[in-house]
Length: 463
Image 1 (cartoon, rainbow, N blue to C red):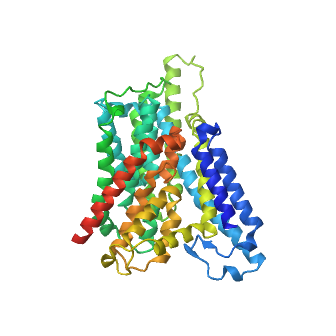
Image 2: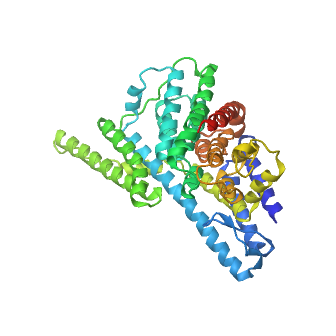
Image 3: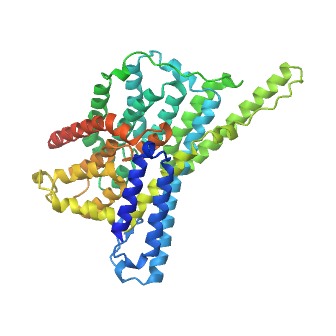
């Protein structure tokens, strides 16, 4: 049965990568393979011998001894758990995208054009990748990617150029998320599991992550696509854009507030994002109504044009196909995780690769194992791979192994567009083709990944 699930995933994965050749939107195979995967698990529930507990991030020891009724209860609980975790991401995504659209309704991103005074494509590239690197460490790589791609869509007209920027932003955001305990989900998992501490995470990974971002950006800056000046997009005047700076700083401030809310309350980030969205929505409606009243006064109360609701308008412009695609692919990967397929893949690496660097890892863990975990995270989700590593290795807290895993899993996903949450979002928002990314961006991500890994292996001897 595991083979059947793998086949469904591979076929669905190929359909997503061949989106333009098949002329079928990628959200369709993503949703179909998600539904089929969980459908087959439900139909052949009694044939599975392993089960991954998403609450404890480990395989259940007694699953093969459970009766059918107990397995059904476990299936329902597991499915609800995965749905809940996926919904957290999706509502977070919806909230962030809506705030961005509200800012755009007030033409707030035109303020960014004054910030990017030089129209050099190369300078814009460095500004965007540096922002992605820094923001992802503060508000996580997914949110940083959403914000920066949304800004790009409002200020740069050239679609092909935006795809290049998006690819480099994905690399930079994943690199920035690796050295922060809240920058990437896998790093957060290691942090919560008491495998790494924030101080040593910065000490071990800041320089490798920086190299992982800087080197691809430096190489890309010499490519022909980044020669010349940027053609800025123009936004139409909707009558309320005199509040553009107010809404820009309010909206971005509300998004940056989210991790602070999480630290203070301990609640999932989507709760803080909904609070931020509510506050920004109130401000948007107040400013719109104020503008309407001023127009009526100026026209001697003969002004009858009713103001457009900025929140409804912004919600209507959110890319729902991207959200559904994200839902489908995350839940499909969760199905493979549930029956232990991904856990088995991670375990098989330890027994099949030659040993290397054993004197530095207390249990004799190969550096190649960690590097292949990074490469594997480009093909499948890095969360279950890191979860598997928590059960595979027993090194103490802040051992360099855990930091190497955080780096490899966090940055390795950049090598394929579907290898990270940031990449999946970029694929949806910018309609990036799998093979286009593979041809143009993957080699840059690989160079950065290997260079950062080399820096890590060299500098770890100093700590």
